[in-house]
Length: 226
Image (tube, rainbow, N blue to C red):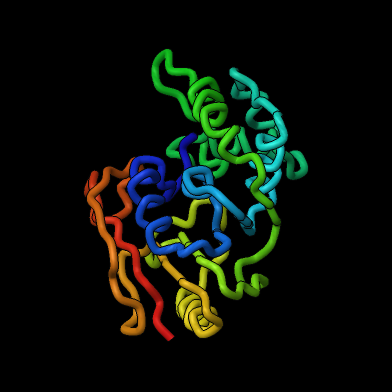
């Protein structure tokens, strides 16, 4: 399923690195988004997100719900104004241009975006079983002795589903606090403050040309130090 900033293309490689440094700790992902990483790791897992529709979507999928395979433009517009739900999460991201939450009904020739999103979700459904999904702001988390992987809205890029400004400075301060509570804190971003060092990187493509108009980008992972 399309999702702004989603890690679908690099999920396997990134998850392999995360598991290699996890040391048996519970896995916590406070910005679960497209659920590509939480589905690629195992063991004790907690995923949360500020977007209620996202949480409802993945909770329902983990419990056996299957999204539709076709969504008309009129249905898209109607669902846009409905209360948060698994269906609204599916339509808002899976049937929108570039995976931006209700960023415009996606259309391209005979391509069926709903079917594509449906198939992608069904492939990861089994891997989501056993995950604890929570609707909350990342700042409400209080991890201890865990591996915390964060994929926040990147600074100076589109924020996907929210028009609210994301305070990157506050975010990094909270990450440093978490690192001081015996957590392994790893963050995906393009840049980081001096107390976070790059530990992994890879080249990948992007559907949303948000970095200098380029169709590719270097994904970086930073370890936050105390």
